[in-house]
Image 1 (spheres, rainbow, N blue to C red):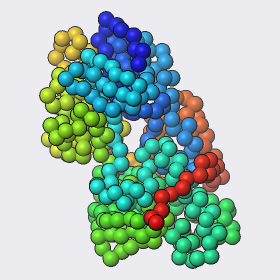
Image 2 (cartoon, rainbow, N blue to C red; image 1 turned 30 degrees about the vertical axis):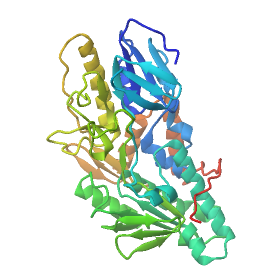
Image 3 (spheres, rainbow, N blue to C red; image 1 turned 90 degrees about the vertical axis):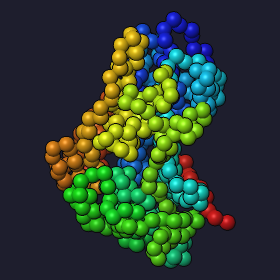
Image 4 (cartoon, rainbow, N blue to C red; image 1 turned 60 degrees about the vertical axis):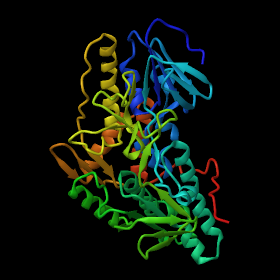
Length: 427
């Protein structure tokens, strides 16, 4: 890897997401050597992936080069690499570009889509966890309407314009709202010779409410917003299979669709060497103590989505969201410096700053610690918070200008099929 030898302790971070970048920033300008490994050379602002999928933003608006984030930090090294294995006995990580020894290792590999063992759904559905996946979904959505123009088969046309979203969490709700606004304001202008009123958007939720992690009022208000937009919400229904054409469920309900979008959950992205039952707990996450140390190690840590820290207030582990990841990265940075100075580490305490979701134009729900509100003001708060946490002044300005333009013109300029996507179909 051509990482220079140093007398400083070497801290290797796997993953350039919210947790990994937060930790690297905290360790900047300290007397340590930091090596960050990631399979991408950019950090992704995942909360806005759905806007890339629906043509509201271009991908470079929510991505930022990792090297640029940390370019002024001494003793910092980034390598574009796939981490294949962690040798816990030799304190070494093995990657596709070579091996590297570490004094301290921090696993911040994040999460991946959880299909709960259903291989057919995994094969034929669309995920939205990465920028390439979001671009594939954007292409498929637009290609479906192009194909709908060409077919004279009414059933096929309806299936091409029928979108089924599995999962009623923030991702599913925000995506459904965006698709509903496209149906209402953009499709009639783009496809005047197609009866776009036939387009259907469905959310299938296995539980009895959407936005389960938020308050009952927020959940009900979000449901009201979606129904006014024409979104069909099916609760207490579990999707059991999808063969590329037909969605079957735990009830008699079925859907004929060319597009099933899977937003029903995620699981930890474990790495060989730390993927045994000794270290892995619920949600395929690594069990850590209050200092984010992985069970049985004093020099190997896990933070962010991959880490499961169980406490009285979070018996299932902390939520797999940006805020816990950011806070864990900052806290671990302090603790690693304490460890190097032979001082006792301080336990992690999560500060819940609330949750929010947008359901389209002028519609959002916000749950803060002591206040809950919905509607237009919540929508402005949602926009401000997301702009604040975007990395890079340019990205903030580009996103803000896009939002203002889209709001005034009721348009989404990035509805481009840059790279056609060919969906797998059952033979």
